[in-house]
Length: 88
Image (cartoon, rainbow, N blue to C red):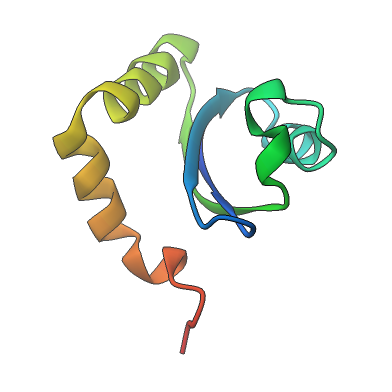
């Protein structure tokens, strides 16, 4: 399986979108500062992920979320409760 994931920084509340074939290990790498682009923003929590059986589909989805503001905005609306730190 391949995953497109959204992490939320507990430090600055910003989101990070990525892709991996091992979601647990990738989250661990982010939180252990092994990822250059996110090391200043740890710790992270997993806010959302999508699973794909084809790697190409996951890469297309990741690119879509990163490049198209409307796709990213729709996703943020859909997972608004997951992004809220004050869940009921």
